[in-house]
Length: 288
Image (tube, rainbow, N blue to C red; front, side):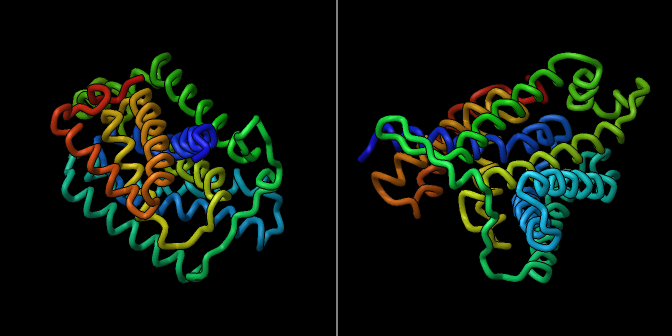
């Protein structure tokens, strides 16, 4: 086994997990909402980019903002549909609604794009880089750089300025925040739109590394859930560290045992950690 290559693979995979989870990190931390349609939104982002390249004849770079815009709009629509439940913090109904929302998105995508696997072609996949025994592509490096940039941006926004303080206030007590004159509905709108845009961005950067299919949302939402919960509800830094840890574990476990059992093995690690440390790697809350 090429240890250096597996280490690189794990770091790349970990950044991909973290980037996919960043929108959910903010959503859980500020809105206290588990969006079980997150994986389907990831899938839709990948297919929107693929459609933009195929139907509109756009280059890969131009297809990315199209998918990000579509994801942001979808997140905003989702927020408007669930605003009353969100303000009431009706978590059971919210989970059911988001689960149903994801199934509707998957069914609609199946009708629109078909069930056949497709390829989101990126020119960066053809650019290979060699560092001793390690082989990477330019697409891999883009995933790493974009993930670090997104986490630094979110850390800065939440840690400084008025918007960050509003988000933290909403996370603590949305009703009291509303009485203080803050537009809580507008904050929720921004959070949902950010989640949709962020997961669409993740899809356009990560999906070129694998075939895309309309049923791939389930695997994405499972791994995202592991990253966010293990990292600590709403913890930006915790999600980043958890993503890297999960990526390294997946790479080495897949190489030493079998990739097919990686998810099951990950839960064998996560379950005792959550029992012994319910707050994950960091305490909960919408924080830096």
